[in-house]
Length: 254
Image (cartoon, rainbow, N blue to C red; front, side):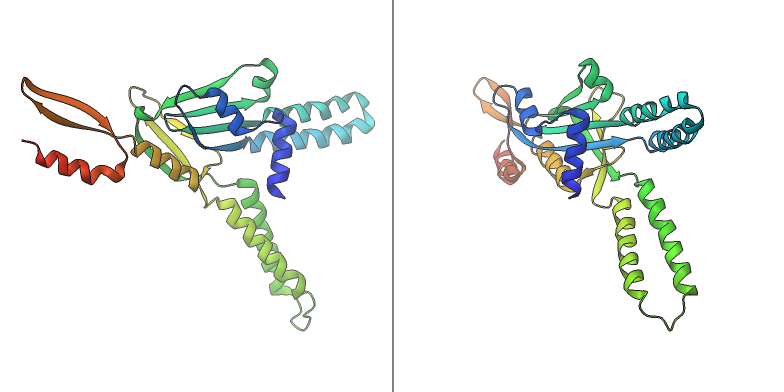
């Protein structure tokens, strides 16, 4: 249900799209698509301000109808607070495309394309907490705990309501922690500023695993092949599972 609502929201704001189809248009010769992830970023403070502005517009509009203009303005601010981050991983590159309402209206692409060979360091940590969900769960837990301590112990029928509410609240707290996601920073050779992926909401662990596998399997190994007229160095590329064979070949060289 959550995925369906999420897809309808992104389809309404940014138009219907397919991540694999978008990635297929960006591929170069002999490049293949590996995996991708969609991240919906939102500005919590702007959304809260828009809701307050909408409430003020509705209440004040009863007495001063001209103030009803605040209602469509608040909707516009909500749209501005949302943007979509498309992350596409191929066997050669990682492509990060950001889509917001402004980019959609102006038809401007906001895209970063990085060669996997340029990535020097991958740093990742916990993703930021979902603040609205965390605040809701904490307030709910305090309310339920206070009520449970004050309730009449002789009445058991309300336990059928309290126990499911506790379970739902604990699930919200776990979801707000975003334990299944990570915020990723990529250090790029020759670039002073890191490139971030999922700084606001994080990326799933499976995508982080795909990224690490692709980056480290493209490590270049240098070995020398002896020739009559000297030593010739050839750079050969191979997956990490063959590293033991490469070490044996290097040890056999003079």
